[in-house]
Length: 310
Image (cartoon, rainbow, N blue to C red; front, side):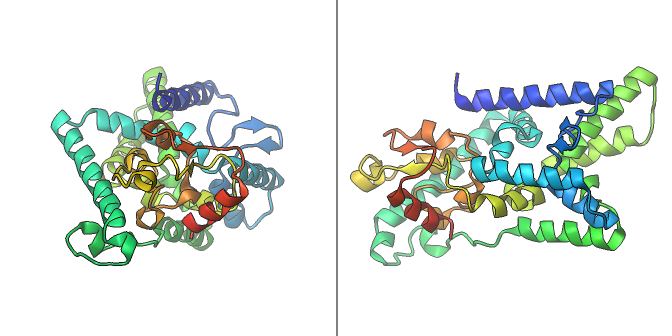
């Protein structure tokens, strides 16, 4: 079984488990309150905004932030790739695309990544500017819009005294949808929330298709933390890579990456290795088996990783 399917199954199982806990009234019923007593895996952003809104230092939230920071330091944004329900919902949405549309999107990404690889192997690697390929015309901007959304979430909380972002968080909306439908079928509790909450979730999934890489403040917060992580990050063996050893355009790793990281040519990726979700897709996609994810990168590889994250 492919690892991508295993990740989807893991995320779905975690979601179902927490959803059952939620409707059963167990305290660990959401990803915002999973844990035991004072030790819990609160959403770090939720913990920050709650303390900011109440202007109170909450020990439980502080413990949670420390725990989550340590987890992000070790595993990066693995939460996004293995546990968060949003990518699962995105796969569900993609399932309903027509085969023609699916093939078109895949071809567009493939052409774009190969264009970059050809540029780097041709004029780009020599400092030229042929102007004939899209890579020559424009590199990816390194502006991270998620940090602005994160700042907006914190600022709005300070102004209104309420964690405003929690009202539109897709993770919260997903569990809220489960809860309102459960109440509808179990207690015939028909309220406007039965329509409004799922509608908000659908709008976000349809119109904010790049939610994880462009809008999610939680991902932006983890991005800031994971920049200091050096564990389980993908590294390329240049002696095996088709582009560096044979001069053959490949970029299969960039095509497979769901976090929009171009591992071979990081300056062209929309995101850097600080956003790696440890999903292993690039490792599985490499036809030359040139990519590995060591527990800790070697000294020479650390320099390469640091350069990728600038």
